[in-house]
Image (cartoon, rainbow, N blue to C red; front, side):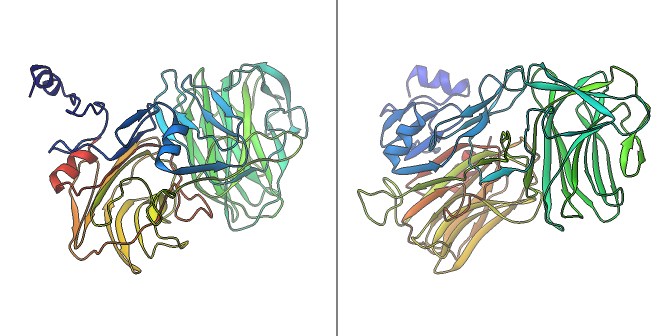
Length: 466
């Protein structure tokens, strides 16, 4: 080992291999480099001994086709909400605080914003004991399009709302970007005649949820608040509605544990106890909020993203340098709000059918991560318990050979299976398992790497460590 290599290893850095592989590429303890490695966090890629600095070049050289038949929003490296206006272009997502942190490649299902005029309280919205100043401050996307919601100080609920067509008994995620302007608190409410309501109250100074309240047969499944720059918070509530035409309310309140009048938060307010509102959204499902979808006079939509590889140069091979007998995959992602036990795919390497009868997969649910192989319909998935919080990074590493599969998460205990046989795989999906519907619900996939050897369990453990 050279003196420079010794110094770099003492500093905790990996020196370049003899072949000139970049130091950031994952490597086993025996010095074997990843066959390919996508570092979506830093927008750098390694395929077939070549480094690329563009996502599109990585997709092309690995044989990946990426599609999304619409524009899509994401948070950029400057912390602002941005729009990728071109179809079929991947989005690299960041946290939205003053010093943004990369979260990686976004893979989202199709979504519809059931609100209209999501950035304009002056149209369609009905004001209840409140009024609005339009375009009153800078919004999370850097434009002067955020509105001020002002209460009428009369002790009644002070909010704006729209009527939404909904299905009873299923979850919807309501969200809005909110900022304090004297009030200190805000709320989101599903409301129907005061008898069936679901409410979450948010502290816009501390960034906390101060109350969840239900009346009648409505249900609050979960709620959350995420920090954005310049005092903004994206607040959300997942709830099961109890009526087909509920009202979806956004309100200002000066108390984190308010009293309720006819099912709505109400306190005596004073002039100047206002909030700023921007980017209101309602989407079907319990795994939001997903990326913001703007609406104007009609409901806004975002198409599903599909990312699939089929290496055309070699039929029946999912990507370059695939081994039919041994292998390992490492995947790192930032956890989203997975609030049910349904497994969501991070990736699926599978046969040509729209199922997992022949596959190598990594799946995540509320409390666990499963990865392994399935051959002839017999699954050998190794389950690791891991209940990661939203915006928390998770790394899974799985290896396989005949009758020898291993899986480990975040440098923990390695799980093994000595009965697994090797599947025949012809394609790889990132973010789902068939292309029919993207099921991944993370904030972004930060790393993916493939080895066409089977590392030792000790090496696999090291590769999984964050």
